[in-house]
Image (cartoon, rainbow, N blue to C red):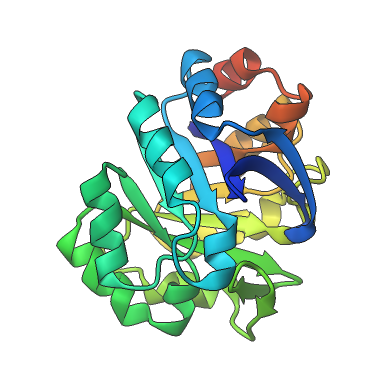
Length: 241
């Protein structure tokens, strides 16, 4: 299992939100590139970077911070937030991003996902952000009527590298990962699934690994790492176990 420490960007700073609420942002580092260096030094093999402002505005807002991370981190980076066109995808890949995440665009323009995945094999992922059983978009401020498994199935044959499934209600709460909901998406498709939202400790990583059904390929780690509730070395050991 691959662990993805999260760097969420708001106003050029590294923050964590509570349940996706932009009004409840805690700043953990005002230098995102420094945070990227720290995660790489701790032994993580990927970074998960989200432009929160960009997700709401529908365009890249924190691109200076993302470029600083790309110049600093010696490990692959996946980036999402505000990616709405094939040009956006191409620009991030040209800048050095290893995987571009499409969320709102995957709901509103699924053909874009197919085009991007065909043009950039293994470099496009889809974010499935779930609130009360339905997919949320536009920086989590709008909720659709779309079921997460239905959205996942749209891209079964599209060549998407991964699905990043987030339980918004648990994000930033340290309440524990929603294994059944995320597992249901993993069981519905053959696309690798990355779990996100609520990971509080090593037990959550082990629960994801031990579940019966399709394997969960990775997990996004956020607040637990920043607060010290989850030790990086212990997390990586559990993921390798």
